[in-house]
View 1 (cartoon, rainbow, N blue to C red):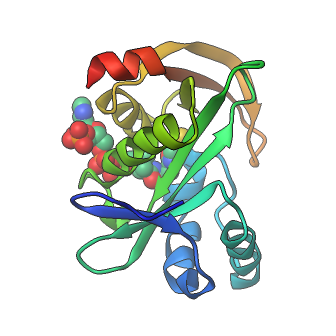
View 2 (view 1 turned 90 degrees about the vertical axis):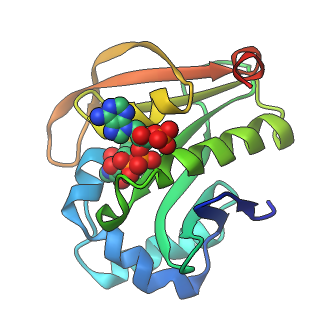
Length: 178
Ligand SMILES: CC(C)(COP(=O)(O)OP(=O)(O)OC[C@H]1O[C@@H](n2cnc3c(N)ncnc32)[C@H](O)[C@@H]1OP(=O)(O)O)[C@@H](O)C(=O)NCCC(=O)NCCS
């Protein structure tokens, strides 16, 4: 994937050199908790996960354009809900120092355009734990449409069982939006 360049952020593959920035947000309890994964508690875990991301074609760094700092991550994974349709799920997480600046929604819009254009996606999905209002804002701001709530859908790392809200954007809906 080429770098996707927006007004405020750039989306690119992760590098091993991103470790300091990656650990900064991955170890912050405010990030993992609502995203659904255990905040990293030691550098070795973070280093291992970053290595996997570096070699992944689906995981990308969100870079603040003005400073070059890696402020978050965004993913484009094959859908595990839709069948035999070219569908992908977008997921993201951002360093809390950079919340509320429109970075997540710009990153999502960049990846959405890329997925429809370069991956020939027919449907994109986003989902979030039902009480994750910030993710809901990103989904709606980017034109994704609420599909429903999956009750008792996910077992979290802390043993909570949570409801998950699901959104979609079809290629047709995307074209109409533009
Ligand atoms: C989810 C997360 C990435 C959102 O980050 P953020 O910085 O709040 O996102 P943005 O600043 O891009 O805001 C998203 C949109 O919501 C809008 N918004 C913010 N508050 C709003 C409100 N109260 N009402 C309506 N819209 C609102 C913003 O205006 C923005 O839209 P715009 O770019 O069109 O202006 C961040 O909270 C996070 O990393 N959380 C922890 C990890 C996580 O939950 N990940 C998602 C897992 S599904």
